[in-house]
Length: 322
Image 1: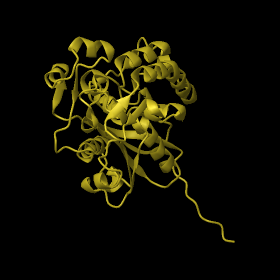
Image 2 (image 1 turned 90 degrees about the vertical axis):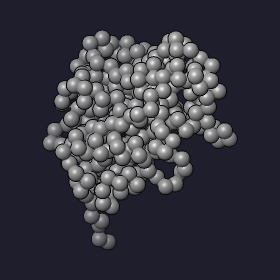
Image 3 (image 1 turned 45 degrees about the horizontal axis):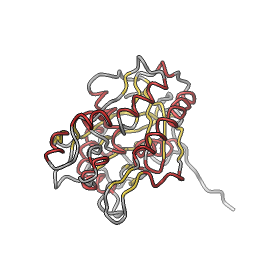
């Protein structure tokens, strides 16, 4: 029997460029109050740390935002559409299960006939998609991948539920991933706690986002610091050597609690949630792209990414900035 041929790719991968997009429509805490939400600015800031979030306009879609972030990431990488042969979109807010966002995003960006699919692990989706792209490239199945996380949660909110509608926002972040001569993406530490899947859901009847906030808070603050430390250990990095910590922007209290447990007193910690809200899968690439663009993190610096949320699925990884 003739053996099948296989393929191999580069030993290492790296992020070549980042991009992000936030809708122009700013929704402050006072705007929510004006819309009839039973809350106040101090209550929101104290509980979740959010001052404002962005909501997409009525005609603005998950695909629109993904296209904008992806285009920016391509420009930052110095590559063009013809260089990309894989597109992955992490999202859980497409209006229908079919079609996926990735093929349409690829077509809009002029990427000809790439592999294209969506990933849905909720808030950890970007790190899952990033590592899927890395593995595919290292296996020789693709040369360059465009990984995008795009979410439009404003279409799934119950304004009568002040515990959830105050949190969520819309936006997108993207990364171009390619081969590397040297290590630039550490091993991923991922997993899930499926026994708690009911803590974060889209209700099948109302189609509204629902969350057991206290349960998620206890789980995240108690579970995620060891995952983050393990990601650092596998990458051969001490937490004190990190240039930045970019966790999922779920809640400012969660972010600060994890950072404290990691001892990150001198490390830049992403707190994009203050002005972007919780954009689920998009929070990590959106925050990282904005930090790099603002010069808060230098090129080639080690950054710890930590996604966690619905599922309850999580993924931590150290990467070098482009």
